[in-house]
Length: 64
Image: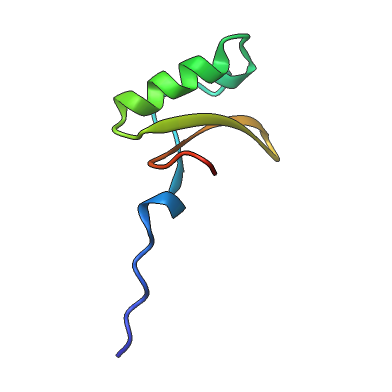
């Protein structure tokens, strides 16, 4: 039986659990997103465009 390869922490990009949906639409949304992600234990948070609009996405690594 083969097991799946474990993902590197930099490959994990998760939507913020605490950030309200409209966070990234605010003028200071990028800063707020980063703060929410830091409180969730991630190193960085970015606002990215999704099909449903902008979303706050958290990751452990910069440069993604």
